[in-house]
Image 1 (tube, helix red, strand yellow):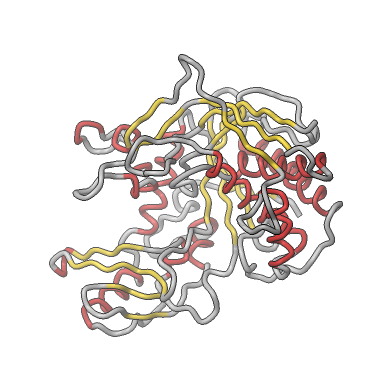
Image 2 (cartoon, rainbow, N blue to C red):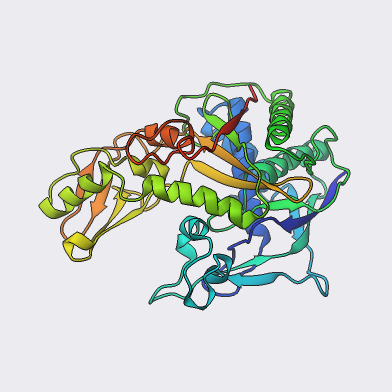
Length: 403
């Protein structure tokens, strides 16, 4: 088998396109980028995070690179045209959150997770699409070890569909996809369609699948060392924890709304972060303490009505963004229910020596980097500040053990 055709459908709407504020679209480069990310994470979990040049060469050999030495991708990706009657349905951010017509959102937790898609005075709100399409993976003619290459691409595909997503807000539940029907695959022991009915059964299926992925790569590549925290997002039990929320939902909106509401309550006006930033903004001095919320990703916008509407943006010294190490994924269960999967990559937050940087109206103020403690509290601990961790809100997690 050197050609694999996968019938896909959206589980949650996809915010994707070359021009974000115009018509949404799905393009092969976006999918290729997602597959590269999960292949790098899986391969890094076997050969280690120290041999970056070797990892890059192996990744480029499978998915291509711009340099002449690596050349074109061994795997060709194609998307089918939508058939008549099955064209994607486009919906605005407001409609998806139940806030059409200027009403308050029916799903405020969902609106919080996808806040960057909202409209503003400068930009129109984003539109996402939902629908079904076919993705074809084919090994380019003349590629050596073609069967092996297709299997490795398939591993990345399995991880992407079961743990990841596509497009903007992909780490916050948007752009999740699923296979529409059972199909023959290069690795029969790793089916793309998970047909289970409960979160506990989903945990078991993910455990089996992740073990299969790691065993397959371990049979091909020699194992190397992994630092803790890892140098980048690595799929290894030491530096990546995966959980299934022990609850089912009747719709994807309800699932992301409850998760988003918990996440918002945990983060909003959180002390000592709120006071630390406010004091730095008013005094013009350095941040006295680490801003723990930054562990969930950067930038963060702060706004203070008590200071006459003054605001500030928290970034790092040399990087505008730091993607969140915490992924929210939605999995459809057999019978029409939905389950939430959370993936926590415990990678190095920023390069050694980097500092946080608060950009306000005056000169920028610097501060120390946060630890990962706040993420652990949100997922597994009891929140002594706002009593809004998942455990505080009676939402328990089932850990996926893939060691």
